[in-house]
Image (tube, rainbow, N blue to C red; front, side):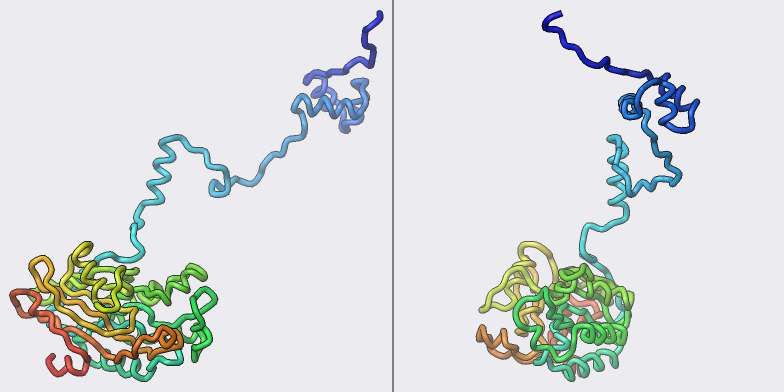
Length: 341
């Protein structure tokens, strides 16, 4: 008939035919022959009917490696597991201590161990003095190591006397030498942060954990109950706000707008300073501590004057005193404070 299309008859097999032939024959080619079709047609029909060889898994699947399939309730429970027991801060935001006696509190920061211009002997002498007197307590306020590496800024990597690994060994020895009962907490400075940027290793947290003291993250408040008085001590490395004409400006603004405290410590700028400022009905003491590093190439470039190296500290009195701020007494040097306690 004109217009009609002629060609080979389309062969379609049933699943029952294929399965029966495969059961009756060891080889697929023999099964195709029994069905009277070519081997390619047999394979085509086998695939079309979904009768290809299926892998049988003998190894148990590990859920962690598999595609996530959750119901609404499963998802909520899984998210709760992630939260379970985990703090939402880098380190402790607050931590409380109690002392029965008056103490000398010294905030040690900006050692910059390993830098060419650091006074390493001065660091050693200060640490030894802290160790010798039981009532001297220490907070490490960051930048204990110079730590210039490929992730740091500037050319400081070329002005280090010892490699970073050695710097870390010395800082670790200092913390272990003073010990948990001496060191009330460890903060992370910007120079330690370069290690975290490099490989996620939090060196300051490591130091705190090494001796069993508390890791204070980037900033925190220590509430010190000393005798009958309670002193809230704010600890920071680099305050949010900065003024070259008002060194403690950032600490004071933090107290006014964010965190209430009686005594605030900061570091970072390498310029020592201490102020008493009347805030919300009380006298707030603020202190930017000295560095143990003399001006380096960067400091010389920006023309910052050389600042004195001080071991600033505060005596916190235990006997009941009103108003409380009178129990916070500033000294420019640890040696001077030791004469009074």
